[in-house]
Every structure is written in C-alpha cells, then in structure tokens.
Length: 244
Image (tube, rainbow, N blue to C red; front, side):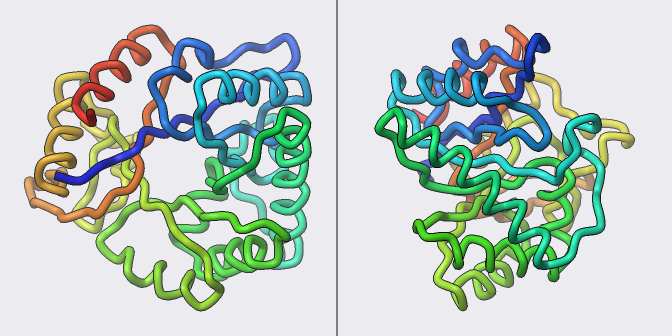
C-alpha cells in the first residue's frame, strides 16, 4: 500500500469575492497549493491562507498561473520561455516573501489551470517551468500529473535536479493514457461513491480504472481534492480516513 498525501488548491478568493472553504479544509490536508494573485488571491487572502496552513502545520506550495484573473487562469496564453520563467519567479517570490513574514517556507510549485494543462502536453512549456525552478534561489519541487508516461517527465526534471511530486485526482475519470477525461464527456466527474472507490484503488493497488475499463498503474505521491462546498469537505474527511 502506498502512502499518499492530500493536497488542495486554496487561497482562491479575491477581494469581496469568496471561493472555497479554506478554514474547513485545511485540518484534513497535507499540502496547500496557494494562489499567487495571477488567477486568484490577493495579499490579504494569501496572508490569511498562510496563517491557516501554519496553524494546521500544512506544507505550502505556490500555485502560479498565466496572468488571467478574469478567466480564473483557465485560458491558455501564448508566452515565450522568458515570459513563463518571469511570471513564475514573480508569483513564487510573492508567496515566499509573505510566507517568510510568518516564519514559513515554500516546499513546492503546482501550476494552475491552463498552465498546468499546457505543461503536461507541451514540452516547451514544461521545460520553461523546470528552468524557472532550477534558477530560483530556493530548492523547490514541482507537482505534475501522474500519467502512464511519467518517467519521461522525471528524466527531464532530473537533468536540472528538480524533484517531482506525481499527482492524481480523486474526483476525475481517467482515459487510457492516464490523462483526465474532458469535463465535456459523460462520466468525467465521479460521484462520491466512485470517488471513494478510486481513492481506495489507488491506495491498495496503485492503479485507477480508466473510462474503457483498463487498469492503469500510477505511482502517486499526492492526491488532489476539492473543498469549495460542504459536501466536498465531508468527502475530504472520508478520503483522509482511507489514506490513514
């Protein structure tokens, strides 16, 4: 049985707009991926989220994105390698500085939304992100999606001395290549019963059952859960029990 951490994307409120039940989720998770202001989050939200992580002794990760506040970071933006490196450094440094003010440090980086998706399908984007972390004056791991071809990503990361966290998703169906089934397709988002069964399979067998019924082996370090509603928070507590 593999020991899997729980991670959640947090700090995604902005100004008067509130998103997520961060205070309710934080006690159950191991890793908090905190928005850095480009898709969500603002200085006060970042400060409060860091304080919650400190209280629950949760590992902190930067959650940078394309500069797309209106689109919540879910729209791809054509950026050069230099631009990707700069926008990552800018966002990581913002969160790192605020973390230091509370006596905290950052452990990893998990790109958000379209930047995460582009990283997994575009070798140039992935390379730019690796370079950004390698050039940052702090050792940081990179969280990416666990896929059937994860070894390729690990080989690229090894060249620059970057540690990878492989991530699975509790509530999403997988295709045969280990990618997430598009939300537009039937069954892409799992029911609570299906979600708990998938988590149990990951823990006990290091695998998921794909949309076609294929058993796909995945080595997973961290499991992404969502806590933007109370039902989700209750599911997180049950998932935590499966991982204990």
